[in-house]
Image 1 (cartoon, rainbow, N blue to C red):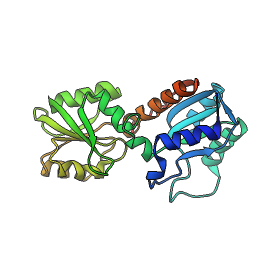
Image 2: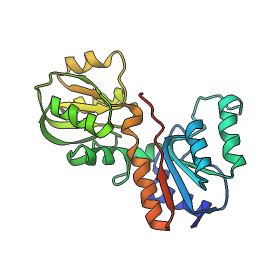
Image 3: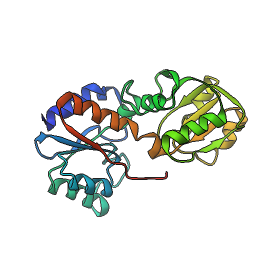
Image 4: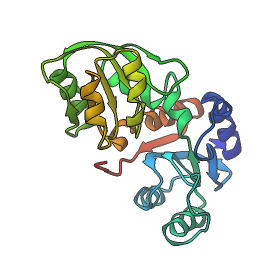
Length: 246
């Protein structure tokens, strides 16, 4: 068991939240009960995940995509009202960590993805959110590994027999960050989504591109963080995946 404010303080320090300028508040977004025994983790705080957290009698919900994004409507109406009302009525704490959870060197989305894809020597590219590492396989095998890990077929752009040695990646919707992969002469760039202009940019720069799913590439950080917290504070933990093909 741990106090809800003490848990926020611990996570904020563990993820170095103060070092990030983000698109949303990181930390305790909705305050619930003061004592936490059980945590549910998931990628995004949608109604389906909240409803399952209620069914599981969770004291806290830990997500990567929470509420209160910059530029969104500030009024509490519609689905935002429904989601927040459900959390408040059931006294469930909502913790959300965005960029700090992408970047963390142990439980971060990028590091966790590298571990599952068996990428060697994973390291950030400068002060960006993009990481680089080493593999030694044709693009077809890299794509198959991505599919095995994410349990979904990725979109792959490039020659399947092309050899991949230097690889770069960034979880989520980071297709515009392909420029960082190009700058280091990477053979392949992996992220979650693809935009219309990306296949041509990749082809003209002789770099393969894999869109593996925004949701699929960001399952693992929140699980790793919640497992760390469960061990640190003797908490119950369950990860719930709300399927999302994007």
